[in-house]
Amino acid sequence: TGGGIDKLDSLRKKCEHKNFDPRILNEPYKIPGNEAETNIFIEAIKTGSTGSIALLIEKGADRNASTQNNTPILAALTSNPINLEIVSMLFEGNQDLKNKINNPILDQKRPLFYAMAQNNSDVMRFLIDLGADLNLPGGSNKRSRSSVNSEVPRVINQGTEPGEPMIFEAVRLNMPVNIGDHNLLNKFGEPPI
Image: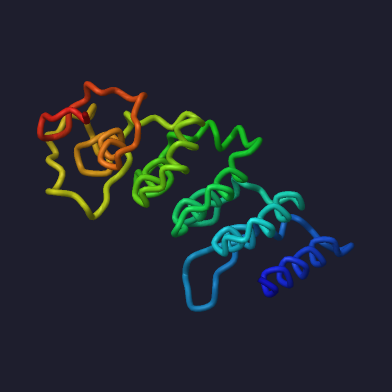
């Protein structure tokens, strides 16, 4: 759209100004009327403008910089729909982020959980190709059948349904699952396949 091109041109001019300091891209600030911290780079990710994101990365935006309650990858994975190109841009050449592919981001939810929660098989495959582990717990969501029993063994832990590793969600989504432990059991003693 013309408006998107105009905004990108405006952003490009600001980034190319002789007094431009790339540190400002990751400086946390609060949006008026909202207590949550954000930064210019995270806000660009939320808009879904791949051109703006590519420009900000080129101009020095830190793809790992976090604010009090957000990170670039969390902003990308909580967008609806998740944009594979943006997720890919954040991981490209970013070994630190790749090394954290199985680390929880927020509320014990791992990157793969967010893709599964939106049934986004392209992003799921991308994350699995980077090393996301379907056998790890993913977090929990509102689609659970019942509350988690504190007696459930830690090996089973929480997947996208309490008590299940993420491989169960992959099977529910009819994703071809040729990795992951097919011998795991959910809280009902059922295997994923």
